Structure formats: structure tokens, C-alpha cells
Image (tube, rainbow, N blue to C red; front, top):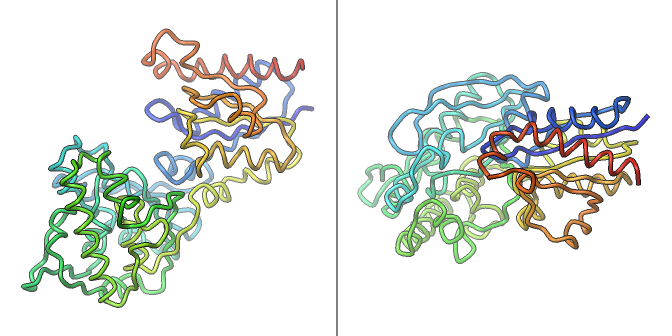
Length: 374
């Protein structure tokens, strides 16, 4: 009996990783009716992670928190055993704003602090925070303020929220945050290695995606430099050049300094919870994919992680994606023996998105048949 492991990430804007795995499984069943199928949808700590964890047995918690600007948003996180898994983007995601210079300076992370506080209040004994997809570049100052930190200007008044306001920061009091969390450990899940400051830092690399122009990037980088100095003066250590501190607009740096967080690979952490490693043992075929397979996929993203695991298991790999922007050499380097992009079999991008499940089933059927007859 052929054992097939299906371990895709989400197709952003179309299907969750769970839905992708379900659609591919139907195609595998069409091609190999007697196959043993193990569906293990995965995530890299970005959007869609919570759905993957819920599928792995977690309980979804929903609550209203302050969004990245002024309005409340409906956010959520997952409790799995005694650990809370929280996506920063559920509170301050870029989808909640229309990116502009104004939002780039004003967006904040207060709602993330509310999520963390709620999880602790519910008895979580460990917090795992994913930090991608935020609208903010405030170094996690809003998050820490929501947990009780004092973030003051030179006159002793609160500086206000947002990366732009952070330019006035002169002093921070972190004691209340530590009292609030107690001994609960925090892990920041990210595969981004950017430091907080400089040409590869949070403002320079991610600010333009959030609406920041050149002057805004300079303003935000200077504000984060002042914030890093204030955090160091508050006894938190220097996080300005710590790898990964720039993730999520610097929220990772704020978490490292103010919450004592450790940084871990988002993909590895989530994969360890889904049972994918155990499933790959003895696999005859592995299928993975994501919405867009490109150069970024080679650096910490789920398909690269699954490819490495498939290689270690000695199993051939098939890839299904919305679009594929890697050449044949790059695919071969991942160990891919067959691939298909939905956009190549649809009349338009909109059609590929709205009919992704059907296309995935069809393309999976074809790819698996081709593999089985080699």
C-alpha cells in the first residue's frame, strides 16, 4: 500500500492549509484509491498558523482587542494543552489598514498585549507569539504598554501609540510587565533574521510594505534606535542587533527585551506540533505547496522545511502551488520530482483563486498518476 503524506501551507487569499490538504487528498484518492493518506497541514508561524494548530487539537479563543489604529478588531488565539499560540497579526495585521505614510507611523501593537494578558488570565503556562504580517513598526512598545509598562517622554508623560510617537521616548518602566507575566515563558516564533535597526532592520526592510516613504523609514528607524536605548537603560539588554529582533516591525525585539522571550524557528515549532515528522517515517510520497512558491520559500518557509524532511525520509516530493516562480534547478535542489502551478491551468488569477480547491484536486490526481507510472 502506498503511503502518501500531504503537508502544505495555506494558499493566501484562497484556502487555509487545512483546506489545501483536504483538496489534495481528494486528488490523491482519485489517483490511488487504496493509498494510505496522512494529511498534516503546516505553517511557518505566519497567517494561517492558528487554523493549523486548531486542526492539531487546539481550542480557538476569540475576543475583541484594539486594532492597529483606533478601532476594535475581533482577534483570536489557540490554546493547546498548557500553551497559548498567538498571532500578532490577529490584533495588528496589515489587513486592518490601508497602508499609507500615516498608518505606517500610527500603527501600534497594543492589541497584542491584550491577547497575551488574556492568555495568562486563562491559565496559559507558556506563550508562543508569531510576529509576521503586522501593520506596525513600534518595536512592541504598544504591546508592553498594554501589559502595564510605562513608556514615557522626557517630561514623564506617556508617549502615545505608534512608531511615530515612539520618537519622543525617553524612559521605560518594565517592572509591571514582569509582575503581570510572572514566570510564564515567552517564545517568539519567526524565521526572519533581520535586526531591529539599520539597512536590514525593521523600518528599512518592512516599513515600505506598510506604507512608509523614505522619510518615514528614517523617522521609524531613529525612533526604534531611541527605543532600543531606553530598553537597555531599563535593564533589558541591547536588542538593536539581535537576529530576528526586527520581525513584525520590531515587536520581536520588544518581546525579547520586555518579556524575556526566546526566538525559535516558526516552521520548526509548528511542525513539531502537527505530527508531520512521525507521519513522514516510511512515506512513499510527500506532497507540499503554498500559494506562491518563490525565492522566499527557500528561506524558512514551510515548503522548504517539508522538502528537507522528505529528503531525510528518502521520499520523493511533489509540489502544488498557486504559482511557481522557481526554475527547474531550484525545484530539483529541493528534491521536487513533479510540480504544478494552478495559474497555468486557469483562465485568470481570479479563477485560480476562487476555484483553487477544484484545481488542486485535479492537478494532484494528474501529478500522482504521473509519479506512479514512472
